[in-house]
Image (cartoon, rainbow, N blue to C red; front, top):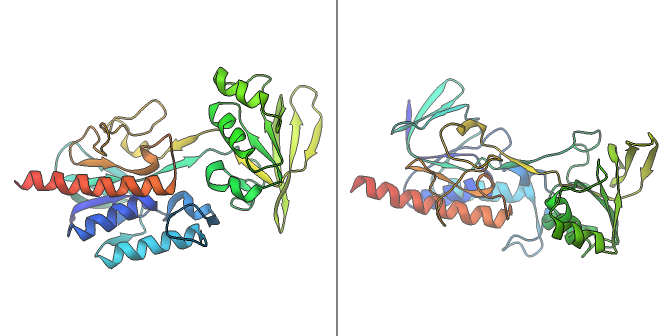
Length: 309
């Protein structure tokens, strides 16, 4: 049974940054990177808004850079999935399938997964016109026609933001009324660049070697099928934090985001810290996740020092 001072569950900007700081504090962190190391950024092509990359960087390359930096200072990175945790007593118990580990402190950086409709073409064109982050990718769609899927606050926010770049933004919604708050609805409905397509479901995302070129639509009232020419497809139907592993052990909100105390990364269990999208339903950016990773490592280091004292 392997024992670790700091066990980091999940990689991505939060996990790898936590590892860099923890390793430099001589805590010899162990990272269970999961089966998709780097998280959501591995499905992003160009990252142009992360400081330090003046020409931009491919998402997978950026994650590789962070991993190498963490390993340089003594981090152990394992491409394994954590399947079970026991946070009821210390040292904490963590299982990777049948292999048991123990740890004095845990940093949870399992991230969140964008929800998609699951229609044909979505995964095929992910990063090539299909996105779930307007803030990340809107810049690439300057003077183009694009669509946003959804009817809640996040969809209205994404649609309004995208009008800064796009020529036209179509909001496609399954119903004839929005779930979004009144102020967000009014803002979107008054925007001349936004056109609503009501009572309509997306059946397929179409494309070619250059990426997305349209969506196949079904009018749920008339049964009529049509094809809308767009070069960008933004899913705005929410995110699901990857926290099923911690249900019943860590406090979380109704959606599943982990609750942290005040401006720290402390969870309700002493010695367990949360960083990145797993605890952030507001910003969800690589840079804010990295910042929380730094916080979590410093919080863990100081907490461990307190235990020793």
